Amino acid sequence: MSGVKDVLKDNKKILFLVVGLLLACVLGLYLTKSGGLLSMDSGLSDLTKASYTQSEQVMEKNIDYKAVLKTSVGDITIDLLEKETPLTVNSFLFLTGKNFYEDMIFHRVIKNFVIQTGDPTGTGTGGPGYYVKNEITERKYGPYVVGMANSGADTNGSQFFITSGNIPAENSEYMDGKYTIFGIVTKGFAVVDSIEKVETDKNDKPVNDVKLVSVQILEN
Image (cartoon, rainbow, N blue to C red; front, side, top):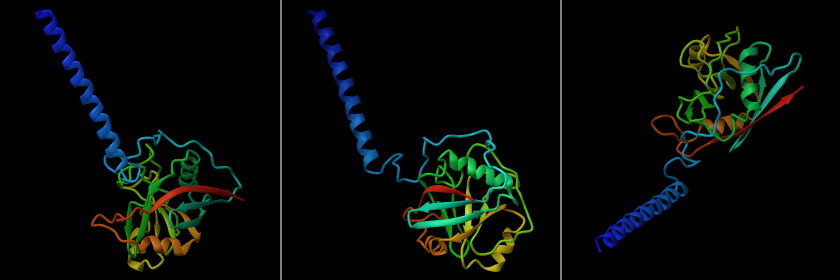
């Protein structure tokens, strides 16, 4: 009889274990669908993004490159400065070709200053896995200029910003010589302005996500 009792006890343990696993699975699915944990709209790390050790050479000579940022509030067209900042533009083209800039948020928006995106984690700390050297030219900052964000000299990655249309001169002068300018907005000024005006929290992150859906490269 003791042998039968032992078998019953073992079966009960197995049953409790199976039920526990099923409950854990159901709870996990519920949290994911309801916006908990790492839901796609949370602005947290997208674990599907690849990381690279360096950019491949993809930019070709004698081609004028433009980029169209497809955002959730409209398109922004940028004339890329491939002759002035070839390393930066090549990296941007490389990452775009890898679909790196798909489904990101504008994680930093500061009124009268900049709108910033390009971080796959949405936290302001993410990047592509490598750095690009600064390419500082005589070009100066002003309204609707596209620059690379960094945490010091020669630490450019994938994050970039666009200056607002009403950026004060003192803010523009502060950035001169510190951040690589690799593009100029040519269309979509109203889209930049509308993003710059969204409500943000204490960390300058939009309360409601503004997304960079994708980037399209135009060649001429």
